[in-house]
Image (cartoon, rainbow, N blue to C red; front, side, top):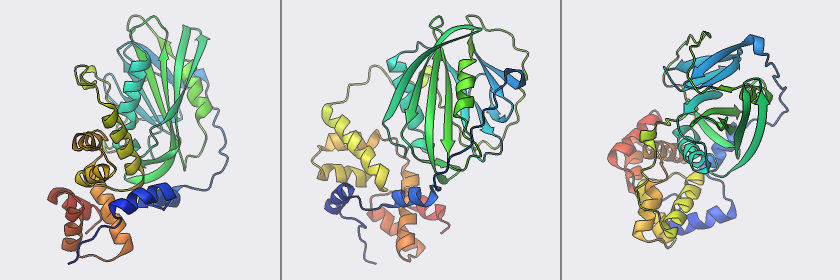
Length: 335
């Protein structure tokens, strides 16, 4: 069998500049519904909420948000009304709220498999507010819209993160919200009401609220990352060079449009003029799931032509995927 590259290295670099459609772009286009103006839910009423306590923060959540998962501390995640997927997550982070902690949490969040195809640029707004519990501030992070992977489906969505603090406690609450195509309502106002009715205490109170959880299949995509301090970036790690940072940004750009194996991405970065060390750094710090890249690549091939199972495995290996990754990709496509 003659093995081939679907897009040569030189042509790949060119096509990214000239706007040629890629598989991931087609997925986005095929799954994005026609834009319609959704009705605002606007259903927040403090008397019909349930209080969820996570360490030192309490969130009052309207009862049309249904809990899908909970542990003793966090995270807690919810669906809304009749939504198919998680729309909101709540958690508490026991460290000081500052620019560094926001960046670290955000990077961890957006690197999860569900959100790895979202654009990595975002805006941050700061606001202060006062409620019956005291004075608060929050930082609202708004991602650019893009497609997310929920229950193995590609869906167009927008992600918001709210970092909430009272400036008196060495910790902060986080609310994550995903507004995706197919939701019955627009919940932005309801989310803001939840944020602005938060309570952060200095001492953990005993709660009498109804926090009974109805757990669902653990395969449901959650919208709150692991924020345990042990998962934090090692502060002793060497600072990346300018070349490494640029290689990483370039690698992320490529992965937004095309499917790559690790070796294929390194080869592409080498072609772009990065050193071996820079190229390897870029590929290794994308947090790409190479198994899933193989599955997407296999799907791309099958949409264009017919392959035997073995022939498709060999083609994926020629593209730089390992035997295991290639077999996973083919099997994932039902072959």
